[in-house]
Length: 121
Image (tube, rainbow, N blue to C red; front, side):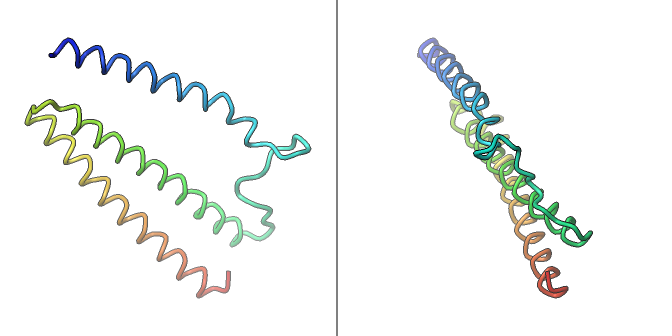
């Protein structure tokens, strides 16, 4: 039984890394527009307050993506614990901290949005 689980996890890991490599090779293509020019992810801002707003919006998007990865990691730890109480606890703690991080990110987004509206952004 353990040997079958090991083979399954080995195959799953190999498949997972193959997908990551495949999709990471196509990322430079997605970053360009029709003319082959890279798009500025922070927008075309001229004033400092617009630049700060774009940096905050972009960083919140990146943090949301990282939180999703932490959720996946915590779920993976929990599902692959095979009844080991230490691994179950580690997976649950990871998920709990991911939820706390998500609450902080949503709070930061709400605060940033309120400030942008207050200052007329």
